[in-house]
Length: 165
Image (cartoon, rainbow, N blue to C red):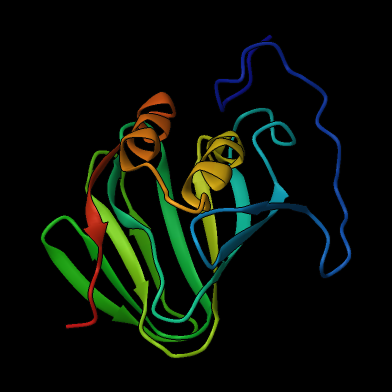
């Protein structure tokens, strides 16, 4: 039997309940920590839902997901978000949909730590961050090694992080 979401044989998925600080905590780039509330392993591969704690003036480099769709919902802070040839500033409560195959990046414009909620479809992004964290937080990060992590997880690193101007 197949379900409407294309999971093939139905796997019994289990509800998940977490306290406010609960979830799988993973380090990402410098000054960026992630708290996965659910991963693709929890959702039968359908999606990931996680909170990203972004350092002041921090954000990921320009990159593209070849498979995953991404959403960003700003909980705290103010972000510059670039996707394709468009750039927007998102205030608290702001939202962005970043389609697969479109280059994108974001930047915390404030001098304070900020938070966003990210959803990836399909799920499984936690595996990327498990591998990326140690490589990107090394004393002297190897940019070639970082790019290889992106490639292994269906993404391409295209450039550096955004600037505020």
